Image 1 (spheres, one colour):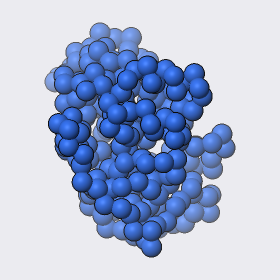
Image 2: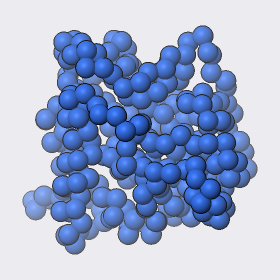
Image 3: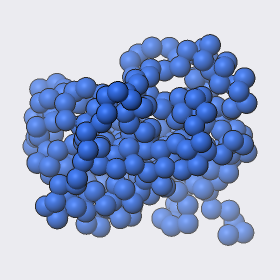
Image 4: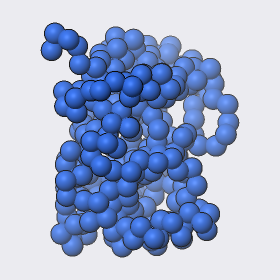
Length: 273
């Protein structure tokens, strides 16, 4: 099957690709397209700029280029985007335009069977959605329809939820997070962990959900779906500075240094290992 994956150039997207590609690359012809950011060109609050530093600027701008200079084994650690591309022989390119006529013609020329979207920063238009033979599925890092929009994990923690989850759903039109739901993955909230820790740890729990849906579609079976109950729907934009202050007043951290250091170490094989 010809599979296009649309994701984002950040730490969590890199992690889910590390988890999925060992299972998908041997069976499918894959091309990966990365947006550079999620949302419009707005300046985020200072605290969210800190989150962006640890999600994007430190790993993508500093750590990954240094690792890419080395000759590293392909097993035993997480791989950078460049290493994923080489090891699994997939093209990984930047893509911040999914609506221009030129780009639509390009995507159409790839003749995709299926599109998988995970954390991609741009909204697909109706013309794009008609291109893949079996449609577009999206892994959203929140339970739908309760947490549509961005930073759903932030909202769930803010609301005192004891579990958080991800939703795999079809993208049926150019509205946001509204399509038929294929399924959910969930995990328990850990009160001593940070927001970024919870975001990153959603993805291991979601791998089987994604792989099962792709296997069914590849076999010619459209996964069963259910429509979202609009009575429970809530849409969230980026949190305001006041909401971030409230979040931290409730005892939450956006990034925990110990959490982060432990995760980043997964990219590095220590000599004693």
